[in-house]
Image 1 (spheres, rainbow, N blue to C red):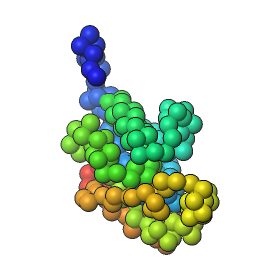
Image 2 (tube, helix red, strand yellow):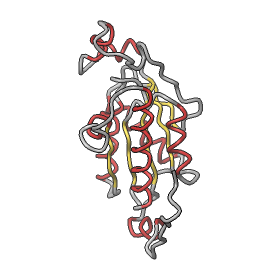
Image 3 (cartoon, helix red, strand yellow):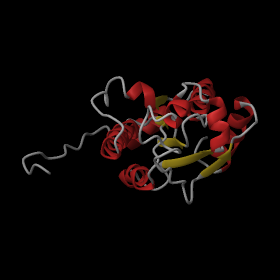
Image 4 (cartoon, one colour):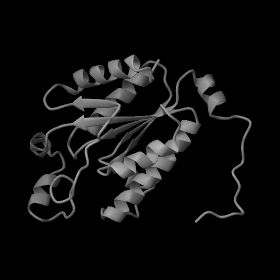
Length: 199
């Protein structure tokens, strides 16, 4: 509920001033896909590439966020919605700071991803669908989560007993089922530049 006694304070140094100082276009690069699809790996490699080219970035990773900002949340549908809401608000602040923020979250529900998109101005949200087949994700299963979900030890696991709603019109649809992570990131970076998101 909005408090009428709280008013947004407009500062002299705004997003445009900050982004001009950094000489970059602030935006959110939102990686979404199943657990084990490669989101974190690709986001990490992309951030390295951006930093090497003197961009100012920050990477918000699903597991890392659960250690602090969202450490009080579980994995029910309600908590997942709240998890993405908090991430979206933080991402918006990074964009206001003039940064390129990368996020790596399963974020299974379209409405939650659209929540972040709608917080930002047109062109500031880049949805990247890391399209890795479920079979490949299960084969990788770096944390053993799919096995636990199949055994019933984990409930409401995305792709097993909880749905994943694929993006309908992502800015970038990255099919990632066998190529090396480095090749995939080169392809991704090329598309980001070609579409004008990265200079």
